[in-house]
Length: 436
Ligand code: XLS
Ligand code: NI
Ligand code: NI
Image 1 (cartoon, rainbow, N blue to C red):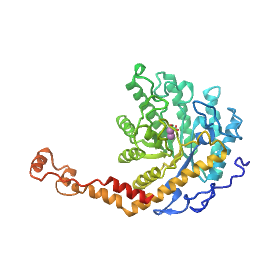
Image 2 (spheres, protein in one colour):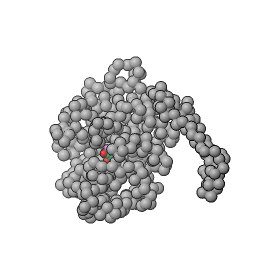
Image 3 (cartoon, rainbow, N blue to C red):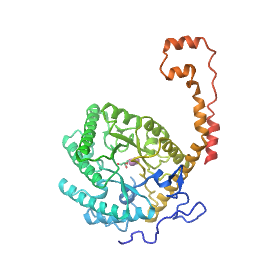
């Protein structure tokens, strides 16, 4: 096989004292943390769309990414070659999982049938590459937002034939995910929302979205695909309002339409902040409902109000994510998929390596810090004590649902006015800083 990243060797762990920029300084895949190898905690994934298809354009300028292997054509040959490049990248960076949209890996052809036929031939090539290098598919998905036919949405389009086209695409993408042993399948509803309510029947659209997801569940069952379905919240962009706006909205939607048994959430850091939440908040909401499935690891920019999809390098962020993941008991089907792109100025192939190394090292450090925090138990002890008035006495009865307003009215009249303890937020923030 030709080497497309010539001059770049396999990235190895060299430890914190190394000054080699093409080495891991913290991510040591086989090192045990909390009884498990780092790589099994982190389950890193690479996003095909950002690595292979993102030309690094922005609304003001053309793509800058150098992709000497890509002839720019929408041909099968080019699609197959890109796959080879991508698997070389996975091998050299040491990432076991990847994710793709159908249209990332194989182009749209003249007819829908030709499109699907080429797609499945390309998928077969991915299957061979997976086998050769021991790589695995974290999740697959269908791109139901790029083509002009999806301008009004896919499953929420007012046009029933567009709904059918979207269904055909998802059917084939589920087939492909199944064939590749994909551990999950994601729905991100980029255009499943509206630009304005003036022309929108929202109730009908949301209903159609649920019908579509039920069809996907039924179809997966009919072919024996048992991977995990995910829904990925995001409030807006490209739509003004997306129906799957945040974790709580998704959970309510899934519950209302009886889909909660079939879906978990794929949370993305930058989407959380776009929704006006922290990633920690979104994780708490999802974990509280036993519905955290997977993570799209990235970060936004505090100064910019859109989905900048930057690589995660903030240790507070990675520590907070890993704290919650460890407490949850870790991923089952999910992983940390780098849904992240380089800045437009970082256009050389080697920048793909720098970017992923940075994200992997940041998560390795977050993992270690989180494991230490959990082992020491200082935060959990504090939180436990903070709620201890509910452990016994009247608080215990409240939690056991043994009392009502009548009892509490009598009780409250007979006690001293409540005395509060400090929340010690600043002290705890200082303690957290000490760990970092
Ligand atoms: C876009 C989304 C997208 C999904 C997959 O903002 O993050 O990349 O992860 O369709
Ligand atoms: Ni994403
Ligand atoms: Ni995103």
